[in-house]
Every structure is written in structure tokens, then in C-alpha cells.
Amino acid sequence: MAIITPKAQTTRHRIIGIVNEEDYQMVFSDTPGIIKPAYKLQETMMDAVEGSLEDADILLFVTDINEKHDEQDVLEKITKSTAKLMVVINKIDESNQGQVDEKINYWKEKLNPEAILGISALHNYNVEPIMEFILENLPVHPPYYEKDELTTRTERFFVSEMIREKIFKFYKKEIPYSTEVIITSFKEAKDIIRISSEIIVERDSQKNILIGPGGAMLKKVGTYARKDMEEFLQKKVFLEIFVKVIPDWRNRSNYLKSFGYEE
Ligand SMILES: Nc1nc2c(ncn2[C@@H]2O[C@H](COP(=O)(O)OP(=O)(O)OP(=O)(O)O)[C@@H](O)[C@H]2O)c(=O)[nH]1
Ligand SMILES: [Mg+2]
Image 1 (cartoon, rainbow, N blue to C red):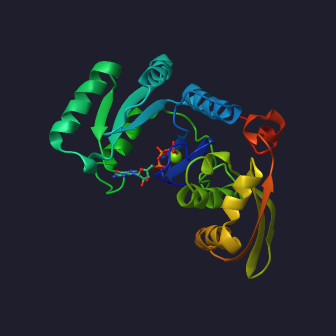
Image 2: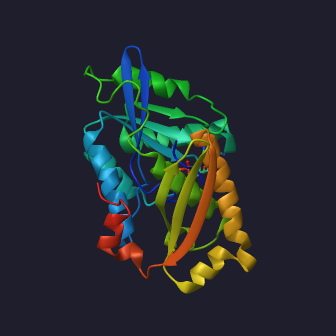
Image 3: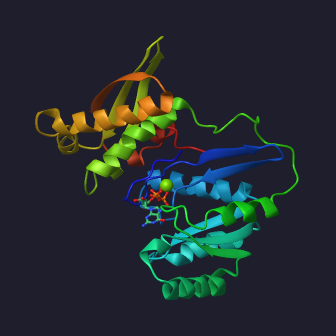
């Protein structure tokens, strides 16, 4: 459900994904990656992390085989939690057994988790044991959500994310990080869904880059995003995108709030 791009800090919100089976319900809470916040938007992203840590029965700490992060922040957050911990080392397709063993030992020493696993999400390798670990450690509790619910997020949210995914994929440097996407209207008719959206940027220069020569870049964003939406909504989509400048929106609480950045 969550959008995926090669750039860091793609995920900005907590996104709930629910797995429903006959005799259990797993509620996954995807969060932004842990960073030291440099502006208000990032502070709200870290609030989303905190909220998830508080609620969780089980913590899946997803790191990857190449990751060299500012680990002290991450470690502090994780060791403070009382949840059962599994360390998941992703992207082992980019490494060899020796490197995997080295990382496993490293994380054993650092975090002493209940379980630790090398996986490749890309190749769906070793993913099943994650589900087994969760199932073994799932507390007995009535389901938190209706058994036919898949998420708590709306269709509007997911379509806005589809536009943001294209921006993260097609633009460089600060553009993705200076951008927000708003769905201003979502109208469902019999055979088509009409969606209007705004891409918010911080400066006129960014607006020009976003639109591109003769509007070509924005058209590309729209075309690819619309295809994703049509697949997701199983209906024809008419998508409009406008670009708007709001100086310094990433640091302005009122805008952040209206864009849904508050737990
Ligand atoms: N080689 C390899 N790449 C992977 C694997 N799993 C994910 N990726 C790539 O890693 C990149 C980041 O994936 P995301 O899902 O956006 O990562 P995330 O951890 O959610 O990161 P943020 O949302 O940005 O905090 C994408 O380009 C994925 O295609 C894997 O098992 N192997
Ligand atoms: Mg993500």
C-alpha cells in the first residue's frame, strides 16, 4: 500500500495496513524512517514514529545491509520500547553470506533482539518467517478493526501518495522534499472518477522545474500517477494537477496541520 521510491524519507505518515485471517488480525503500522528533524515537517514525521512505538506489541526494525545511519537516535528509540523486537536486515540480494553474518552479529550485540533475519523484500526471500514471528508473538485480543478493513487511510490519501511517488522518482535534489500533494476534489461518476489535485512547492523556481519545458514534466507525473490510480480504483480516472507556491510550508504549523501532519 505504501509508495516506494529510491529516495530517503519517502514515507511521511503513519500508514496502517491490516491483515485479516480467520483466527487473527495483524495491524501493520508503517512509519517514516528515523532521522534527526531539520524542519517542522520532519518533526511531525518523528511524532508518527513515536506514536507507533507506543502502540506496538511487536517492533520490526527494518534496516538494510548497506545502511550507515546515525544509529544512536534509532537505538535509543528502540531500546526504550517494551515491544518484542525483530531486526530485519533487508536487501541481502546486494551482499554475500559473510556480510549478512557480520550484520547479524552486529545487531545481536547492539540490540539483543528476540529474533533477527536477513531478507530480500524485492525478491520475496525469507519474508514468510517475519509473519511466523509476528503470529507467535501476537497477543490475545479482540480485533481492533473490522475484519474487512485493509487500512484506515482514505482513497484520497492513496491517490495523493501516487502523485508524490512520481515526484520522488522523476525529480532531483530538494524538489521532492519541498513538495506536498493535496487532493482538492474527488468526484465519482458512473464510469469515471474526476480528481483535482495541487502540488505545493516552496518557491517559484521549483514551480518552473516541476512544470518543465512546455509542461512536459508535469504531464509525465500526471500520466504515470493516473495509471496507478486507475489500477488502484479499478475505474477510469480523469486527473487534473495544478502547481501552487506556499513559501516555507514545511515549517508552518497551520499548513502542516491542514495537510494532515498531526497524529
Ligand atoms: N536491492 C533491493 N532493493 C530493495 C529491497 N527492498 C526495497 N528495495 C528498494 O529500496 C528503496 C526504498 O524502498 P522504500 O520502500 O521506499 O523504503 P522505506 O524504508 O519505506 O523508506 P522511506 O519511506 O523513504 O523512509 C526502493 O528503491 C526499493 O525498490 C530489496 O530487498 N533489495
Ligand atoms: Mg516507506
